[in-house]
Amino acid sequence: MSFFTWKDKGLTSDCVSLEAMASRFEETANLMKKLSKKGFKLKKYKKSQLIIHPDPDVFDEWGFISEERPFKQLSLIPEDEIMLNL
Image (cartoon, rainbow, N blue to C red):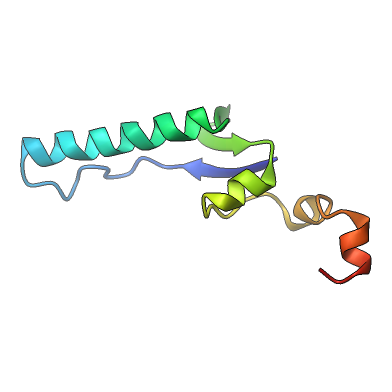
């Protein structure tokens, strides 16, 4: 399953006003809502929060880079594509 780690470090540390902080929170909330509607889920793993999606194509459409181990990513490539070097 494709995933990336969500790290909330300094989401508003560069904001200079309460309005800027509110705007940043709203932008982030809107993104999270869009991800949820597209089937992304939050998975807690140890002390991390992972954003996951079962379909690697949807994950790629959003421009995310999966943190899955390379051998797991390679197992998602159908054999006919491997044989054709696609």
